Length: 126
Image (tube, rainbow, N blue to C red; front, side, top):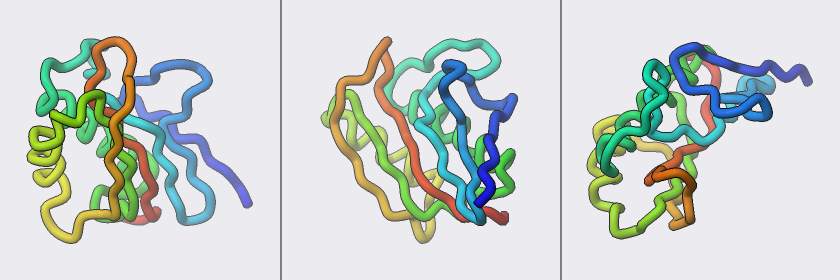
């Protein structure tokens, strides 16, 4: 099966060893997106702003991969502090208002002031 690497200009590239997404068949595997603005390279402030930016970055990755938020089937969400869950969930619900994907949310230690990271799987085709 052929693999295609997705490297959109509208999402931050964090390192050369990092692919924003990989397409295999009709499946898009997207790597963790964080609250960094790709234009300014600045980290948004607060859980809601970081979640919104991470999901905006995720949308850009999906569009570049020929998919969309409606095609996301699974997300794995990492929170630096589980006390931020309500603020995170509020913004997440704005991006996935109807028929949200399957989701797991776990608490982890994220680097450099990051409060949230979101990765997952989508089906190709908008």
